[in-house]
Image (cartoon, rainbow, N blue to C red; front, side, top):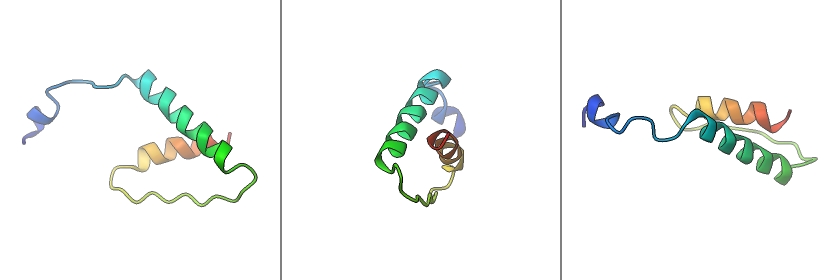
Length: 60
């Protein structure tokens, strides 16, 4: 599969949809680990952008 085929479908999710879901996931993490020490580890290549956003939103 070449790059043109990979992105031929265009944008699958809008920025707003992604930001809303990131906020939902971050809120759930904050709720589940309230008053606990948390160590976050990102292990997937390319996941650092999502990981950084989750870590910013989770503890604000």
